[in-house]
Image 1 (cartoon, helix red, strand yellow):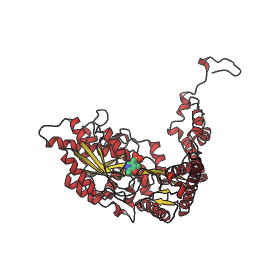
Image 2 (cartoon, protein in one colour):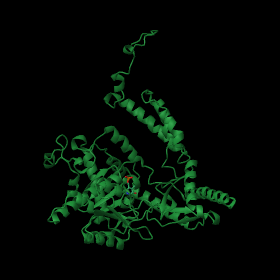
Image 3 (cartoon, helix red, strand yellow):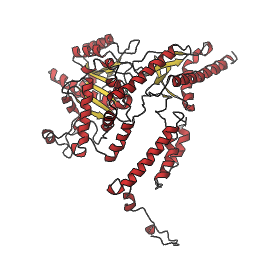
Length: 518
Ligand SMILES: *Cc1c(COP(=O)(O)O)cnc(C)c1O
């Protein structure tokens, strides 16, 4: 300790925060008052910012924000919660993208329900890990109940099972792992001269539609399949998988000695919100003996819809299903699951480690979720859905999802009646893909005008829309997941899009016209 007035600066006498000081930050029996105070302060900052957001985004650029974050010395703690929250306001909260704002119309991000936020606070404080019973106790059983509940909603039958995952990408990867292993086992058993594993992997194919999610391609790559393993069959005018093309593709593979290890149908395509014809696809898969995976990452909200559950008819015939509660159940990221019709297929994700989940535990019927998961240490994300169901109930969630689907139908109607725009297809869920059509002279800059409109709108922060490509051309996209979004909000954003795109088309066309010829 340096004495008052002392000028000695020898390192040996410098005061460093001792273990006692550090320990005060651990959540322990002695610190619960601090825990209450600190968390309340954080909640208060978020609440103030949520209440004050007059736009979904400030339009901040990476170049503006990066120096603020780079300038912080992470080796010099502020030592004070309020100071750290002030700083957080500056580097994050002020310029965050706010999904609760009614003019956030871009990606598959939902405003979140308060029961799930309560669960977030509980689950991270208790910090259960869902890999083994001895790290989670009741949390494991709660997750299992929710898996059973979801499987029952889907109608997967008496031996269904599943596991929570980090998202649709991981669910799809795991589904493809199970399908690959089932397929390899079948092929190896069937042939007399056992094919080598690499040879077999190179012949495996996954058939999906051109509107399927890219995570299927990533899964194929991670699973060691060939570069051309994913075959995308064409879609119809509604952007649903064409079943005649599917049947043709399965035939072609057979004739060429290829093995279709899975068909991936999409229940709610990310761009068009359309549901593939599940009953017909299930018929084709059953006849061909092919694993049917239904990617319902987006469309799973229909499971609780009071009026639209029928759109998922046929999903009960799937071998595996991806659901993202963090897309259409108004849950915070992450909250997702993979469901399977036959629980035995999950063994392909099992590895017994002596220190964690030795095989004898299975005989002792000790429930270790790591036996079913690609992850080891894993959050108790299931608690969010649990408290949501226990406080609000499934019908309330379904009613919220129905509202946004209705709103998307309104938006589609508004766009079809508006000569400034062209709209692609009517979504069964809550997306709308459209583009601004410049008049006459601007026609050849239609792509650029729409790209410009999206960027200019984001830079202003007044509204956020997404973009995508349809048959090679640039389009804009609304994904509506906020029941607070009104027709007026949509009309307002459409006016802004038309203003930005129209300005671009006019000025560019004028510039081209005024160019001296020759
Ligand atoms: C969003 C989405 C995914 C990926 O899910 P993540 O949770 O983002 O990993 C997969 N499939 C579809 C159809 C999706 O919309």
